[in-house]
Length: 238
Image (cartoon, rainbow, N blue to C red; front, side, top):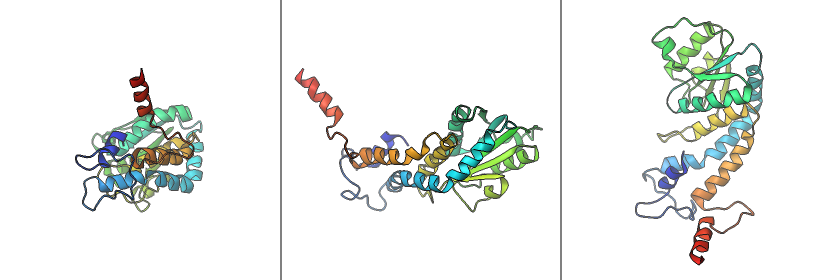
């Protein structure tokens, strides 16, 4: 979620952004537009922390399988917001694993019933709900065609957990607002952690950024001067 959107969600009509006010001093009443989304934006660091605490060993196990020689490339299947996570993985996985990755449409099987040989492929289906019909069907067909299948979802009890051979779970809990926030960012953390590239640092960094931009809290030891104000003052003196 862009910080510009986050700032909009955290202000009242006709007011300045509340970057210097705390959640406690300015609670948003029930029914206020954006209230649920702001709440879930602020839950992102905790969701990332919970996900990596519970899933890091499983992620590393999956990453080891991904690096095996018999896996030649990665196919990514997703819909909606999860498709954005797949696009991220398309760029990240070649860097992390040395294996090419591409996003493919579920319609190859669901509509066109293409006869594909997927031996040597790893197919990763990403679905926050775990119930996306196109993703489920692609995983089922890919497994029959010789692919190693993996699922990334936020819903433990979903159908996708029984379809894929390997399952990775995000721990963002229920997401009530329409636009995805914490389910998306926890999925990104899982994808990055496949390389051991420091997703463990993502949660504390996300917390500091959110505290500063939304609640006006500076990290311990940080300069209290507003750099924009300092620069403006220097310009005026000149």
